[in-house]
Length: 314
Image 1 (cartoon, rainbow, N blue to C red):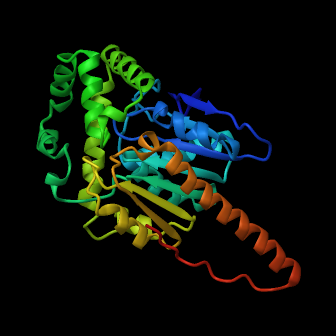
Image 2: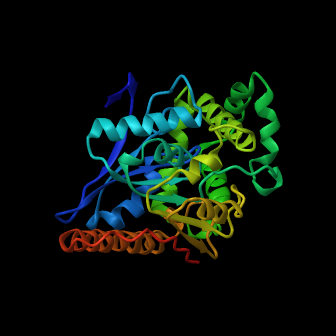
């Protein structure tokens, strides 16, 4: 479909039961809508899912800007265009950072927020496998260098590198998903804009990291503090790409949040342990359903609604 002049690909995971609520899933840097296949399938009994390919990734066309603000605006426009809001909004890695901005700017469109290893700001490059390449982003020809590097690797090698960096235990990567990752890598060789999208998105992410510690409303941490939606933060303790200290910090800042840290899990918990993540999400959905029923009872009985409580779990 076309959204604001950009060809945008959206993968549907239809609900398997009546009364399902809408959900939107947003992938991370270098990923695609397929990153949510397993989790969206497990949750299809409760959620009617749509996974979006961000501009320049998967099957979506490239964008003029790859800033987090531009990504958040694209997500917001999709929710508006689909007329499905408020939605249960999910984001992983860079997608997690983008949905933080979207939820802060448009709370009316977000029923709940689930952040999986969100790429929130941290300044120590030693805590990420991508740290060594950050200085290269200053080079004007960084995209060409990235394209040359990627083209020098066959799809199997490129897919193996991605799996190794994202999974705590790459041997647990399902064979079917590995074949899909190879096919995705093969497609990247054929798409002329992929390297530009990757480098541009990484630049946008690093830029948001630097602004986070400066005065002003653009700070990602200030954005997180503005979120009003009930939020579930999930992270793997063996994450190789995002500083694992950021997830607890996000949970402390978001007013109505819950935190789950997973042992033996890396950067993509929704792919590594989809059923574990699904159980946590279903717990949040049950909690929201219970709150809705309680509010209805209170309104009926003329009782003032109690203030929401911050709940943290590990």
